[in-house]
Image (tube, rainbow, N blue to C red; front, top):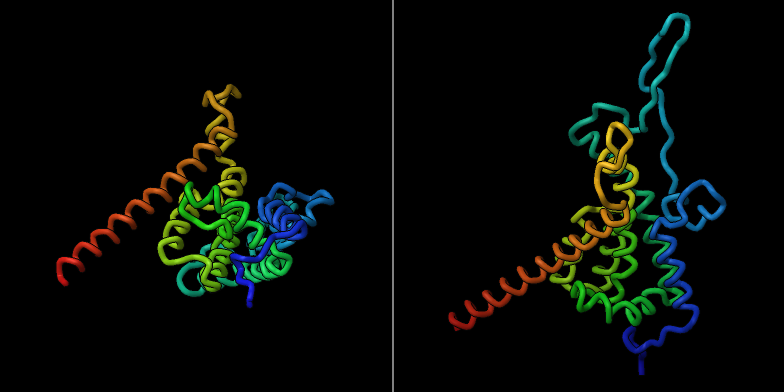
Length: 236
């Protein structure tokens, strides 16, 4: 008799792989320190800069740089280069999730996180890694979610709910800290605190509203499905 994914037990190695995956995709170890080798974004790297302009100030030449996409791009050409920048992250994320799945990380996530995610978001525990990854990178979240959908671990309604969660304040941790917005919203021009709250509270509000948005989508899906069944019942 074959053992299905739901029947397999998650051993210590599976939970260890799950813990590693949570840390790896969360961005907690990001940076240039030695432990950055255990962070997805650090290992994924970045494209180098190219010279985009030269100016002369007296006898000194000054150069300005930009990303490999350059500046002022538009249309299909710029879209192609943007897509080219996504390929390394998507391939790397899918490769890592396949390795972690081999060691039982997804099975451990299903058993450990389903009791939390099912009532909270209506999602199976296997979506836990994609959820964690989406907080750091929209590319990671999207690629892991697509992998779950291809394997039949998310149905259509769950995909819609999960998409709502991810695209509400997408990659909130990375974007919140890298955009520099916190410098302008929490500190006034004279250096005094402009908002009487902490950065942690701001992140918490964003995360809570992502959950609220996902549950609004759940309610909408339930309402439309119930309406469709009512119409079909009346027609028959």
